[in-house]
Length: 199
Image (cartoon, rainbow, N blue to C red; front, side):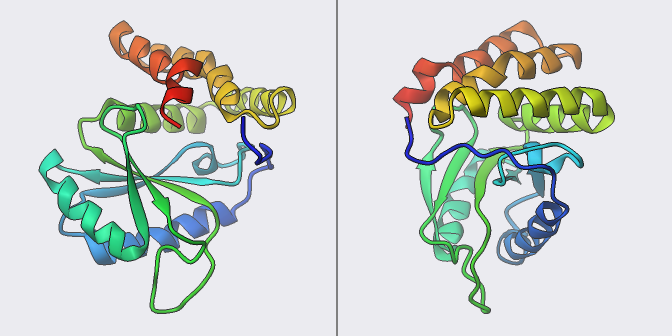
């Protein structure tokens, strides 16, 4: 359970704008150690209702780069939290609403930052789901309605909300060719037991 209520908002073009601003900061500080910065999650799909939290994946070419990335993100105001039970998806938490620190102090909207190796299943999952929903607006609408219903059913329980979305997500990933082993791993990672043990 969480004290923070799950809120689903209609799509906002501002989400893409904020991502581009954040991306420019990450590239300014990390361009030599990351190969890409990807806007993932529901806020990356035009027209899709979402929690107003921008999900961002920094892509590294190999796991050896992670040490340098952790140090540089720390200077920008992010603390490394580990993988939180999701293999090859390192999570980072902001120390304040002013993170990432920039010469012009400002308050940034809420966002989740992850670092993934380029061969990470978590990264492939994020990109495949995003791209599928972008190409299939009817499915995106259905996903948005599912999230609204789950937010009403579990307004303060983010773990049950996440678990409730998992069958839809694995259904999409099965349709785009993910093998059963990968699907089993994703379902396990998003299970209530795993989510609660890694909070």
